[in-house]
Image (cartoon, rainbow, N blue to C red; front, side, top):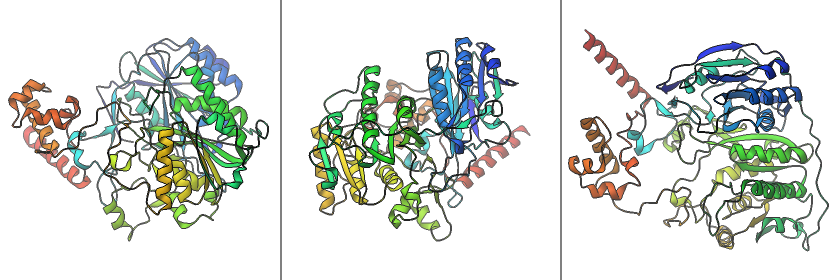
Length: 592
């Protein structure tokens, strides 16, 4: 474990003995304490239920805690969702951190469960109080460069590492080993700020004995025949309200349902705003979730993608009507915002009754689909040059687990069409290859510009794609027509889409008279001379370059000053170690 917390006063770690629900119910947490509960967190046991007495005890603890208290709970994803639902009236949700754990067990035809949930809850409503914490860079053992390619932006990164996110893969606690001290030590640094003084650590793994749940929820509703049987047409794209369209789909007729719904985050779509009142939003979600549960076949899966907090609410409904399978954590950082960057997207998977063995893990998939179910080993980088070189020397592939870190969002306009929230095709190909056999049918009620259905057709699956927007539906129709003409619908293009996935203005395409890096490094020089970040008038007066370059080439003054705010990083491990040695030698010589 390697992390660096800036301006942190490490909390004093205190061990607490709590042996019963009654004891936890009686604890009154003070305002200068942060609490860390290690509950049973072996993901191989999911779904495991927490006894009702312990759920009530955590609710009582939340009621009695000081308004300044922060609580961290490490447990399995299923148990984490249940605990939060028990406590939600008395705490504020801040983070769901996916933590890689030591877990090697998985049944035949099952996805290996490799992560636990670290819930971060507070009694206060304001933003989470924590330090700025960085995770040290990791280096590819083959090329010795950072496992992530930082390209031409190395000068804007810190020499130690990147900011902490809500996916922790650099720690790996053992659910059956000693207390997870590596988690405790990180929390003691992350929360080493006012008003906190102490981290109270409680090991509940033995006291809170859980039982694996056998949820035998059955199918819902009655069979509703449509005028044309789903089996009569291999591919269906329809436009309209998904609830109305779902009513025309037969019960027990779909082999896999996938939904990536609007997130209710005030994001602008084609001709409406995603701003439904929250209660109305979730009532609407419950309706289409119930429809998906009705139309999916027994033994097959409904998968829903969402941010963790909304996924908990979907969980609350689906857990009543279907059987829990997986909480897959997709590390899909979109924009690097906040000091703990939001990278965790949940893919919540439930089956109708007992789940069938996963089709992709039966050894019958075509070679190209087997490739979708392998990921790069975590220690290796994703640079194409390194991949090509090491293919002759090393086995750098490993079967996927329920922690997906190797699929990245679409960040370049050349891969996008006119929709603000496109999923990467690699994500959909993996899901389709994992949960379906060739020739089976899948359904997406929010098909957008067609990523799901295009991937389905490429992999030889039948599909039903539904989309409210006629504009997006027409784009999907056009892309399917391209696919049938032999064109790649995911190819690079020179077009610039109108839709954006952030509120930041898009720069016009232009030729740079001076590279942006050169300009940023000049601002860094000015900052050193001034002893602080410069203002625009100061750059205009002190820079070697016209101020128009800074106005036209950057989206904000913050980007202009990006290099001046940090140290810059060295991408090659050996060069970094040599630089560190030179610095140490210089310091030694100066001291003498």
